[in-house]
Image 1 (cartoon, rainbow, N blue to C red):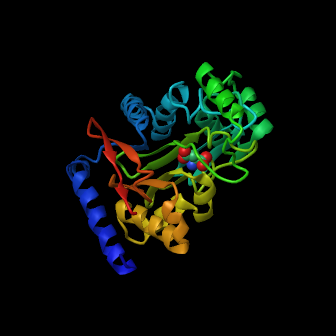
Image 2 (cartoon, rainbow, N blue to C red; image 1 turned 60 degrees about the vertical axis):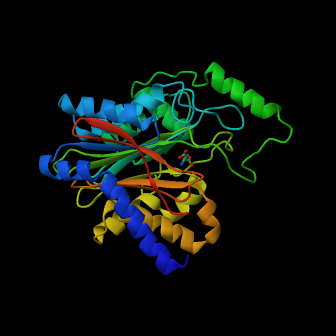
Length: 323
Ligand code: ASP
């Protein structure tokens, strides 16, 4: 397929996805209610919690934070928070960020150990400091100073997986290549033009200690601007960081694209700049300040399932795929 055909193909599949979510979008435009959009299956209970918190009268930031706490606290979600798979030395290192589209300000933590809710520590960075990003030991000490309790984040299952990986003579390591993912990225609107983006992950399983992925980086794992919308990403952070995925999507939207077309356009740019990226694990979600949504995956091998909460309805949907 040549690039012109591919572009019209993208428009077509983007259109189909928009139609799939069309009922929702039409009703949201009428009702102007809150919308929550998250990555992967664990995004559904996270959205449900975010909606519940928001309906109780809390802020959109609170809703996104508390929503993301759900997979962080779930030991069965082995890519986020408690029970997340560790780095190659057996230490769980967590990355998270949250961005407020009104203040145009984020809080983020990277390589945080022994604290199971990095999104809440990121929120404290946003609310209690003039800093944006804190990392490693400093982030851990900051968490203790702001009231978080240190915990062992390895579960019996994640320890078992790490020991099995360690025991394999031919094990894959990040000194050369990549494997396990599944961050929670969540974007939402309050239905009145305010947007927030949040992201939390244990990063790549067996990563080299100290590695920071895209998730806690403003413009990469999160971006939010009330003038336009918000975006988040999941997949190979070592690839996506180089494309500043979330800010790029929001900028495409600022130039008039729908969230769905902006997600597809970003992926197309990543693919066009290096054809090898077509095989990459790159998945993105976006929401406009009017509550329209978009989600796209680079290829069908790594196809994003995303969760959408709108008008009291919670759904799991398949994203558009480019290759
Ligand atoms: N993007 C995350 C990272 O590279 C991983 C993921 O999305 O699953 O750390």
